[in-house]
Length: 227
Image 1 (cartoon, helix red, strand yellow):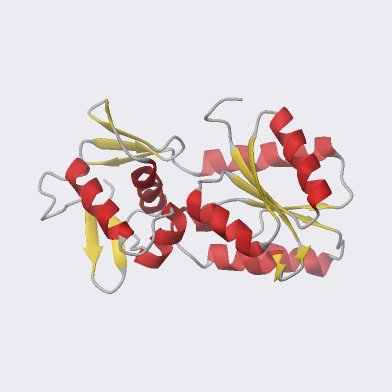
Image 2 (cartoon, helix red, strand yellow; image 1 turned 60 degrees about the vertical axis):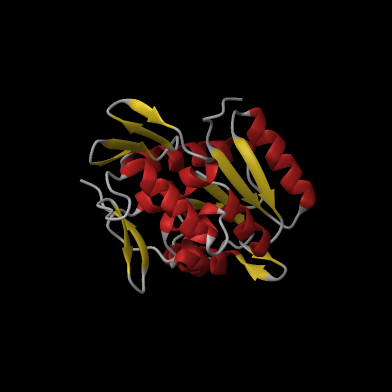
């Protein structure tokens, strides 16, 4: 499996189904993480970047639609992650509720594994064509897919935390993101976000004390300005 293979988070409280889906998706070339609850899923999203979430509709202690609503109402990369919802509910009203919340596609249980693969492939292809992969700011180019920063074609070394933080900011350039939201999306806790911001400024700003690209917005958080 390649390191740049799409990373999928599968969320379901059925451990048997979770294990089967993980093995099947990994056998088909995907990187896979799992969670058995909304809380665990949000914790996973705080530490890793995911290309897609396969999410069960009904779970003890949390509704899948509620998780999607929190994702879409947040900021940074988490709000943009495509969601394929698995559901035993076939009613049109349920599907409409999910789509209104921000679900990208539905698959009813039971389903054919091959159909799951086809729907995942379609969502990932659509997401890739809809979003620019490279973001330009000054003499820098940041690849959101790989988390790779270049300056005039040369790679700038980033820590995993810096890369995740920059991904969050680059996903919505020009839009301030709060420290709390950046903590969730980058995996850095509290004031650690400020430390990461300081380190990033040293790497991308001519004058880190008077930043042009990565700025502080009083009362709102941090914002990355693209060209």
